[in-house]
Image 1 (cartoon, rainbow, N blue to C red):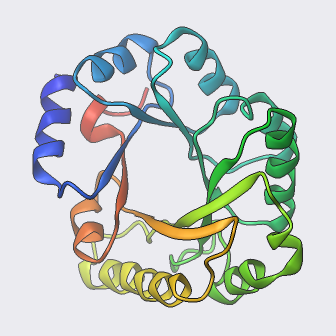
Image 2 (image 1 turned 90 degrees about the horizontal axis):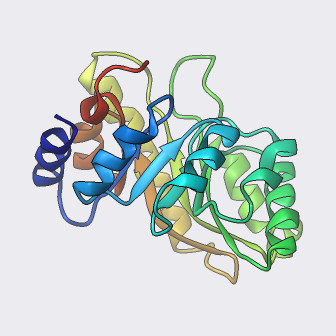
Length: 220
């Protein structure tokens, strides 16, 4: 079933869109099945769970940390994580930089913009993101690279609201792309869209989607 689900999704999305298989809470066997079907990028939201899966699964997998990040846990994944989504503090960027340096690595990061109308969603305002990217303390971080932005839309069936939220981030992303390129920042990835809304997100500029239940079935 996992194989069929995966191939169906891959056939339905444009080639330039990256599919992150959200594998949190799923057993290693399920990830292996997706791997055998050609999937190489997996997203986890708990660092310890991701680290234990990293230990036993093939080493050409790219691991994405997609959960809300606690700075004190960064050290457990700094040696292998490929991309960290959802960063909403300069303090977190500094900690990632510090831990990456210990392993002589540069860790890719996405800053999280708050685009949803819900109060509970994490994320930075557009103004805050612009301020961080222009700041001297950010430009001094040599062991991270901000390669894009991500945002989670409101949990709603209202298509026009979702479209408005996705488009607001796409427009901001485009405006920042022109002015923020430097040694540790090159905005090329726009991560928007999950199982329920990824088609709409792609229509409105997303280049990376995070899909779990449509691949693996409902969460355990």
